[in-house]
Length: 279
Ligand code: C2E
Ligand code: MG
Ligand code: MG
Ligand code: MG
Image 1 (spheres, protein in one colour):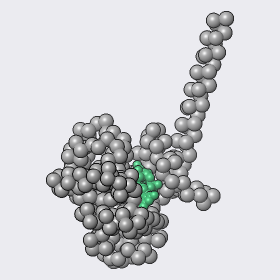
Image 2: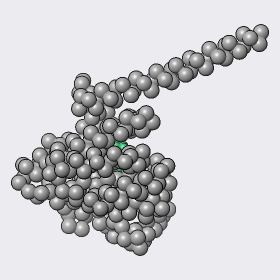
Image 3: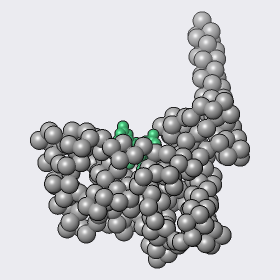
Image 4: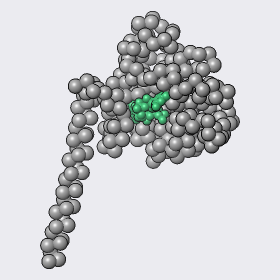
């Protein structure tokens, strides 16, 4: 009888292992294929200097455009890519695609763009020594100035090798590439990382902007602003959707805004038609 229970248990464990392996390998296969076929494409969302009412940069937000024309949002596949390591080739390809897009825009307009294009970098990629060479050769290959590229690191996943991340960021900084800390307030509140990685900007998470009318969120935002002033870092408010929010944020002293109020993320071809695109 005991033997029966034991073999039943072993069977269940084997089935679980198989299903787990199978599903991770299928998504891995699909993602690697999507990379190879250039189905992972950058969209661009303007970041606005609300004081001057001009665009000062773009956040690069990846989309998966399937063969059937469906657009899949990053929350549906980035966590899996982070878990199975595909995030590294994905990001390295994205860096090249963005550099190529910047080059195209510069050729169209006949000048170096004043904008930065801020690419989301997962913690594991920020710690990858190869990141430096990939970035450097993308800049060189497409003749891009370093101020055109920035990296933003989410606070939501921890950095496990802070020394290596620090080392990479020092090199990026020396190259003239800025580091921004993303989703601030909605994660580890990693002020140590901010300091060690020499980040120049904090992006205040949308949850506080949504709730900016509440005393709690308002107080948190105010203290982040006070901190940023002391630390001499810039502040971007994420997820600004209404004029009323924009006004409150401006009154609080937040100069840089990003959100649907100004523009949704758009594909490359719409970029230079955008009302904010003005070089
Ligand atoms: P994130 O970096 O915090 O990016 C901001 C997200 O908020 C984007 O969602 C953007 O479309 C959305 N957003 C911007 N303004 C508004 C607004 O006014 N209202 C609302 N409701 N949403 C707004 P998206 O594009 O779905 O990206 C989700 C997350 O996926 C990103 O959050 C980022 O963490 C991750 N992600 C996107 N692209 C990449 C990538 O290339 N690499 C990595 N590692 N992560 C990425
Ligand atoms: Mg981001
Ligand atoms: Mg963000
Ligand atoms: Mg966010």
